[in-house]
Length: 349
Image (tube, rainbow, N blue to C red; front, side, top):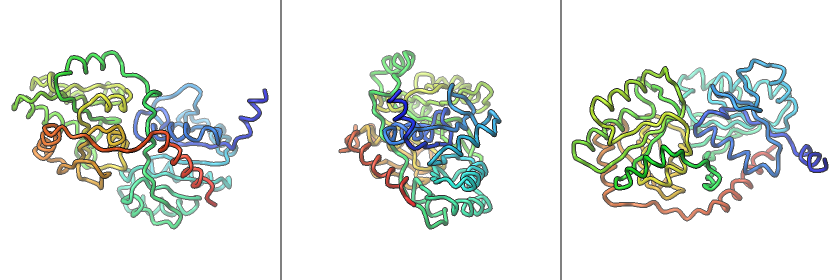
């Protein structure tokens, strides 16, 4: 009883965002709660299409439960990616006189001037806005803001182990160079594949043509049997006879574990925020190639956005030189530093 009483005395920290969905933002939300667990009692409002038992789901439509969570929280931290929903959360939390933190992970949902203008007005009601990159910070015209990338390092031993199917896939291709990439879900941005699975299929064609010992594993975390893009891609892989060169996994796994067991990570997106995938690869000392569509962290190898020859050339150059990234980061030290940084931000008046 005494332990429960002490636990309840912690300030309530409410996190809003895609808790259940597998992606960079959901990983960030869960890891943030882990590193601050000693200081706060965490509650969540989940905005994912899927549900997690015991976690309040916004799509339940239970407005009273939603308002109660906001009312009882001392800190409201919004990670919502949908611009208008983010604005609603801010307005209600402001009316309830809460300390409000907003982290903006991407500009992909702020692609119109009016969306940014309205967002900027609402952000003036917050305690502080966290932009995960300088590019995002430049778009946000508010005084109370900081730039802090969203990366919180994985404690690899705590990550869910890879499924047997993936372990076997890696084992059967142990004599090849393993290249990995991922997507939360397959979507178009400006009429093009946002996550670049189409580019990786083109790379697989070139690998087959040149008889490279490459194996590409592309993870699409969101299961969607009705996704026509995925069906078309799987048909293309089959029709071009690329099964030996590329495999698409359509379920969530620990991408950190996959990175650790791979030779190269590729991030072929045509827009981006501060990608967790890139920072995890750098932290785990696995080489990473990314499109030059936005500024990338130091140590990332770049290729020309949406340019297959440029991507293939970059892959060849990195793998042929057997490069490893340098990382002097220690997991526990990094987590301790981040914990102090976030507590300092939360205590902002």
